[in-house]
Image 1: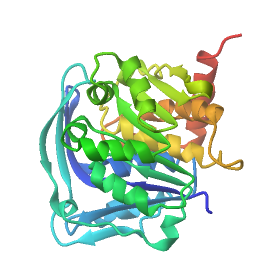
Image 2 (image 1 turned 90 degrees about the vertical axis):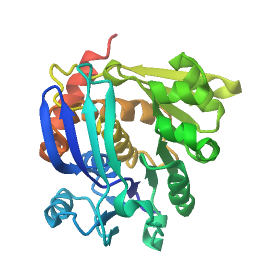
Image 3 (image 1 turned 135 degrees about the vertical axis):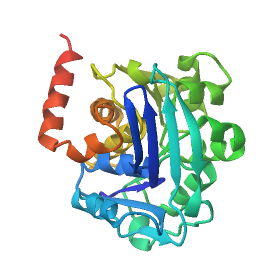
Image 4 (image 1 turned 120 degrees about the horizontal axis):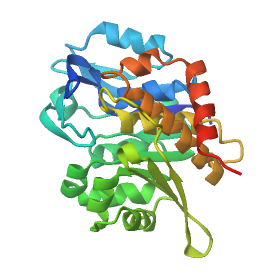
Length: 311
């Protein structure tokens, strides 16, 4: 068993519209953000997904230069997945202007044997049936993680339930968790997620931080509430949730000596993920993740620990 983190998600060409400006045809996708975040915490990471014949070679080379194994990213004739999103003045809220599935719509992933032996299997935001298919192929993974999206929770309820029953950790934002649980209360929604099967669940609160839920003894649930990094100015929040997931996965690759990561490992991982997610928002698209250095991240993590600890 290797300590590799395997990340599956969209690889996209994005157009981003925010109150701070616009970026056209930039590298994006849930898999890209998660992989770039994970590479800050681990050197053993692979990305799987598919791109079209229009995907710039420079993007592939840039990812490889940052230590992301791109050998298993497939290429197909046609257009790469493309997404256009527009953010309101409150950038916790956005509207999808357009989505073009492109080659991703009909691509069927078959993992090579060398990737089925990964330690951390990460299914980022693609449809629940595709996430389930990927995780089912990672038969020997020590820890499985999946992210969710509101529209797919609604349209793919059966697969959402199947996915929740087979992962160690489920991640949703407030709106997604409340939709799944059928409640207006995010705390109650977190408890419902734990009841659905995973050992851990994270409900993300955007600029208000996140809450980690965990199964405990005698049916109890443990909670850890992590505030957000105090970000003075957010240029573009695209990919922050995916970066959060990728950074958490990267950190957890170092917590497997005694089997699955434990409660304290998850707590620390959530704090690390929070810092990386905030950094993602400082510039448009993936610019911050490409430029962020591990030394800078380490200083921010130390500062975050100081500002959130008391005696």
